[in-house]
Image (cartoon, rainbow, N blue to C red; front, top):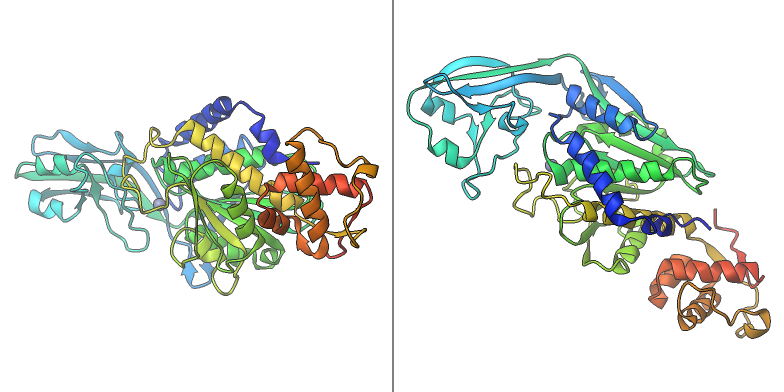
Length: 440
Ligand SMILES: [Zn+2]
């Protein structure tokens, strides 16, 4: 029986974690945005690990109520003080420039310059991350401490960017399974040097896809690496017919920090993915919490918009927007941890195990308990204690009425899904269970 989660758990977590963190570190310096060469280079590096189609959608393409914007690229940007010293330098941190800043070269007095400067007074040493995608503007981000130190005088500002007709790029990795029913895994890939918000999701999704390549899978898997919001909207607009195949989905974001797990339910609230994620988190040995759906967040907003209402939830560690490092230079490679990245990947693999293995069965001997002893079913198969294994077999037999799937039984019994699934497999082999006809 396939057990992606168990196989993943058998790997050395420190080796897996180091690999994930190194991959994130390689992507970290790239100046990504919702379009342009930064996201293209990111997709190229992902493509070195997994089969990936890179799709280019022209500027001006209508996607539902939105339009694919002009493509943005940047070579250099700086502020020079009255003595000509580069005091804010894009080459030191790509967060220094408001993402999507229009090109500019000008000399301004300090008071005018300050209208275009962004800082975080509560964290005076951090650089904020700011964007201006849909309103043409320009600006710089710097530490509050540095801004306070600026003397009066004329400052030269230079932004060597381009904002011209081009393309929006996204990456799509499709792994065909036995069914054309799909599991959708979606991550945003549009933030520059930010680690938890952006790179953690990218690395975990890439590792999952890498792990699934070449396997015999029940479902087909579609991994999307997209610019946030506009990328998901673009994909949905171009792939409306494919959305009917999506049976389960996850948006992954902010999944590498030291916090416990948070799963935000799909708009449906009781989709199988919602139950599977909650179940796996309950048994994962780390703190976890399930959150109700809200129409604000990452790309689950688009997948769960009423015209689609797909069964897509969002898995995080710390919830976006709630940790002080969010959208600042402090969301760096030290903020994400190798072990947490590896454990997040393992948790995702365990959720996929539930989706792959969840089925309904029918007890073939429903009138009173079958006699387990004479069928040699009063024995341990070695994974758990004999009591737990027998208990699981009794739960499976009792609730296998075609109405309850294995995940229902795992939830009602309080036992981990894999223990219930092992019991069902043994009972199936012994002839005491048959697969319910409704299961696909
Ligand atoms: Zn963000």
